[in-house]
Length: 399
Ligand code: GLV
Ligand code: MN
Ligand code: MN
Image 1 (cartoon, rainbow, N blue to C red):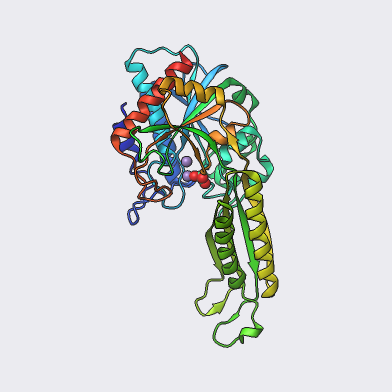
Image 2: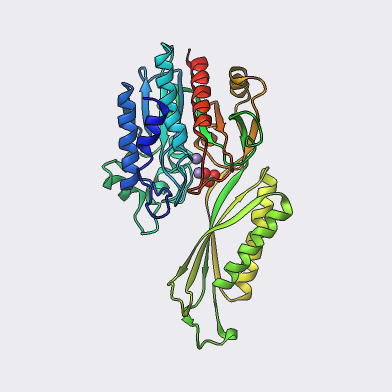
């Protein structure tokens, strides 16, 4: 199948009719639709689909085994995500294999297309959960116990989807069989937008992480409780939002209080608790630590000032990733020495796998730079250029 047909067949799956954004959360019906699409697309190319023990999908061109070259990305989304973040890499992988087949190319190594589960961490909180479990970066017992917003555990969600959570954990045999992983992704910035090239190569990923902050106060009446008598968790929460912005601006970093839940949620009451999530990213680890320390100190001080409890928990952290220089040079040689090489602040499964095998990424131009939004977009011609680039890279690595 060609890119357009693959792309069109995935587009309706998990799209919210109201917002036009995607809600493809791990182990939900929408994501099951994506998994079914993956198996159908693989099958149309004559490839079988396997699950690994962590719920990641693998389609193999050739017999699974040593020396394999893997490509792919993820199919899950953030709340109201765009169509491209993740799916572009998987669709392009199948399209590139289709293209190589048409050219009569015969790989001398196995080629795998992967779709990693819960890359965004939108349901269970830990980003790149599928690849972290595969590499052993997350403890399987801790993963089984992760819960979603409704209190459903990952173990329960997997059982519901007829997968066995007892199988979670590192898969050394699968990892050892992979010689390289190349992930194509929409660019989540505008570095390529002003250039006359549709495809770039990733240099590395900023260190980044997520922290959950729980402010616990005392629920009370908004219309009768004197200001002096309140223990309102909304106040230290608000101070933390501003502190994050200030710390990021002061250190050339990014920090976002990205999500908030106020309990019990009455419009005329003082909250009993406010849960907030901090997403922080910086060009280097020392700066990231500094930003997070400053935000934590501000949150603690504000909590103390308002007589509010604060519990902070790290949900996931990814250290600085420098993609394999040898593989990056090889991609440059295939795509042309002038191909731009770009850093990114966005997390990817390729960044997690980089701890265990040579990995690389290709970025496809995003004219507005917008991502994690229904407005995310790439021009069809640029997507085609991405497929051609990925096909050339796979032909080089697997030829
Ligand atoms: C994933 O897209 C991330 O950077 O959080
Ligand atoms: Mn994303
Ligand atoms: Mn992504």
